[in-house]
Length: 159
Image (cartoon, rainbow, N blue to C red):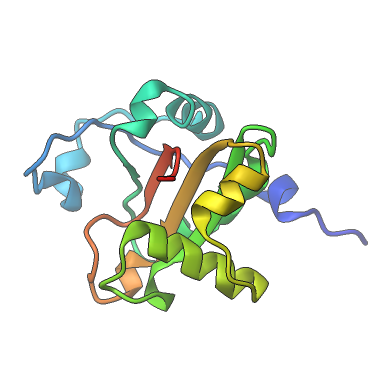
């Protein structure tokens, strides 16, 4: 018997999408989503959402119940992103210092995954300057230390 890889065996969940402007507290409430249509094209949606110019302007936040698959989504997303255009780094928020800046979080995750110190700008430069994708997982289990459950942002790192 041969088990499929995570990338091969993952089934995209149904989901809802709604733009949110600053200061709205509604998205954290289940009832707020009642009127938002359910979608079943997650792979296509994320491909579009992560490659538009707007992806560099605002985070994509994934909300869901504990155990709903948010962390697994970050693993699958990292496996599915084309290496030629993205450098995915998965940051487990419950394993990093709460007070750290975003770049420090990324560098901490790189060090935890590889055992080596690398600055984010240096790593991106060695890869030829691809757009960077950072994914954080674990907000629902870290005591709410950070806003948003799963920020995913595509941007060029600071030099």
